Every structure is written in structure tokens, then in C-alpha cells.
Amino acid sequence: MANHGDFSPEARERAYRTVIVADVFADHAEVIVAELPKLAEGSVLVAVVDSSHAFSGTHHVEQTNLVERVPQLEEGGGWAMVFSPGVSAADIRKRTDEMASIAHQRAAAIDRINAKRTK
Image (cartoon, rainbow, N blue to C red; front, side, top):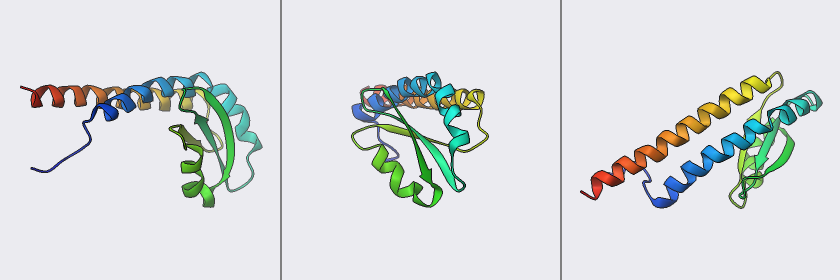
């Protein structure tokens, strides 16, 4: 039988923590948007929430370094979101609402699958 995903308690917990983190990003949408005009050409803004669910700030990252830099910023169990110039606070809140919805659905799916497995 093929394994089509991680349905572990850790995966479920991560999904629920993602819902919380999405709210933290949304709560800091204005702070994030205020940093966007300061970006240099060829850079994006990376906002970070740490493992204790606290907003830990924003970072200007050159697009060419994004693949290396984001994992560094997420070290220790944090989350990062990338933003480009022109994004509004409403755009950020919409994106974080979608992030929370997907994470909530993932957690619910894990619960349903695990419930079926225990029958």
C-alpha cells in the first residue's frame, strides 16, 4: 500500500500551528507593507514568525538568494512568507486567510484519515 502523506500527530500539530501563525502574519500586515517601499531592485521582503509564534521581523532578500535564505530564516521551527512590492495589507490578510484555511483543512483531513484507520 502506498503512503500518500504524513498523517502523524506531528503533521496535525504543525497544521494547527500554521493556523495560529497565519493570524500572526495577518496581525502584522501593516508592518510588512510599510517595509515594501524600502526594498532594493531585485529584492523581496521575507516576514518571519518564530517557533513561539511571535513575529520576529522582516528581511530584505535578493531574489537570487531566496532559496538559500528562507530556510535559514525558518531555522528552529519558524515560518516565513515572501512578499513583493505592490502588495497591500488586504492582499496579505487574504493570503493568510487562505493559508489558515488550507492548514485547518489539512488538520481535519488528518483527523478523518486517522479515525478511519483506527476502526
